[in-house]
Image (cartoon, rainbow, N blue to C red; front, top):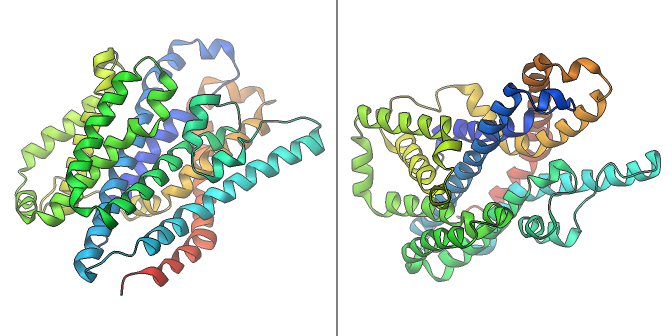
Length: 367
């Protein structure tokens, strides 16, 4: 089943991650200015909401796909499930790793020095980069750091496939256990920032929450009857709460207690968004009604993978240009240029590289 209204939210999730990364400057005076500090205070924290949405959405879609296959075919082909995931995620992921290795080699041979490093391939090839970051830090290519989230998702895909293949009756208890376990872990890791942020256990609750939503929507039809009748005032209240959560994120979750609970409001809000957009007959707005935003959502994986690379090249190419560090350039011109370049590259990649490979997934669709 294709959920049209979930394409553009993918783009908005990328956008908050992009906003976290896009403002940078070599000017120390500007870095200490109230404008820059205000931006960093707000946008360096709300970027986490992009990851929150991706994890909840992944849990929802993957669980829906697997349960739907079981209902339609009375079975579930685990190998085909994994192959379809690989065909979507792996080509661009490994292309970015190759780019990192090529840049590292080129800088050594042509510049005589490393412009940055690449993590050991053992961590990249096994999709455990998030654990490498916990133990070794982020001292390598900027654009590869983001791939910790892909590692977490691949680990969840592996677990979910096995669970719904052989332990499907344990789905709900497992989801509840993952939600509770994630909270317990966050409490234990409260004073370990890297572990709190990058460890898969810290994100397991998001994936489980999306999985529970899919299960109850597809297995408990009474939920769909409720969704059809969601009153618009309730939707307005929920979205206003969502806006408040974004605007005051840094202040709301400043205390240790709220840091532990930080993921829960985001999970609830994103589950409501998915629920309303997919099943309500009269949502207050349809996120799938703007074709260009839908398109950006479809290419959002490319936007995510390429934007760090574009930032790296842009920063290196312009580092000797004085006006680049002026406030107008830092907060407006640079982001617009980088955003446009990222969209262009992602669009070309989607049309000529990703989509042809994605078509191979048809070979593994259930009969």
